[in-house]
Image 1 (cartoon, rainbow, N blue to C red):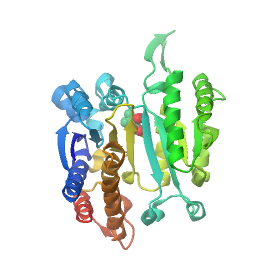
Image 2 (cartoon, rainbow, N blue to C red; image 1 turned 135 degrees about the horizontal axis):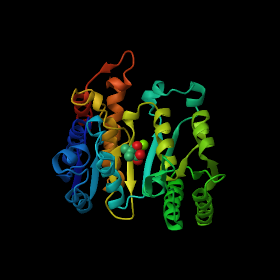
Image 3 (cartoon, rainbow, N blue to C red; image 1 turned 60 degrees about the vertical axis):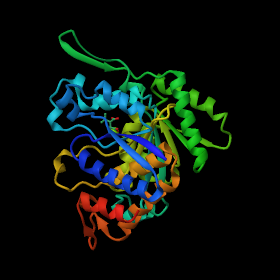
Length: 356
Ligand code: IPM
Ligand code: MG
């Protein structure tokens, strides 16, 4: 098959981990007889430097014209003091909205070889940790009105957390559909004891539940969910929640399963082209030193193969190669343990390519 993949190399460690992911994709193409072509779509800090905006119109067009988009990570201290209207993060939010990517899937699965990296007690870990956070991605406080003003001699600000029924319904469906393909347990997280947007969220989720009688649905307040995630993560199969709650809970989930450098995520909409990225940031402190862990990026490429390009065998080949490299004792600095062999970003990428 021939597939066009939009590549967002990003900032910080982005370009070096993307190089490794592309090497892995090339190895997959060679092994399975596909042709992948790559089109660069600059976004983030590098795009601000080159074009004066974090998301040039041409980049959004490139992403929409490709079969799938692969993104590393954007942002860094260099652009922290910049006009808030053109911060690198704006590029990411613009891309999500521009591509209509309303569902963000963030799996949190404990990799057996990295069990010791989990900060929870072993009796909790032994119950198993394998759940997925489904975060609504283009609504809520991120996309409601942001406003700062002066009132009676002091500053005031607000960010409106708004949801419409159809926005809740479509993400709820993703939650139920995902649960149907997994353990058929869905936990909807909200703050319906306080927020109107959450009361509507809960009502709509209950309506959609009628279409999925096989799925066991629970509701949980976000504060309780944050607590239950560390008390007993084995109780969760699929979590569905609004944008800001999902941002926070998915970072918590990533820490629970050990290295944040290992986890991929997918952002999907109703269109064909999804966006696949590791959940970690651009780690500017270690950029350009061959220290980054490319596994989250490489597993994002695997997720793209599975969900975006409909190539499950190819995706499995990548995931197996990653497991083998870990089994063979290779570790980047962030997941280093006594007795293992410490390698850099490029060597880890090479090791995975050799195992495809
Ligand atoms: C994420 C990130 C982004 C978000 C930032 C960089 C805007 O934290 O993807 O979770 O808040 O969505
Ligand atoms: Mg986040």
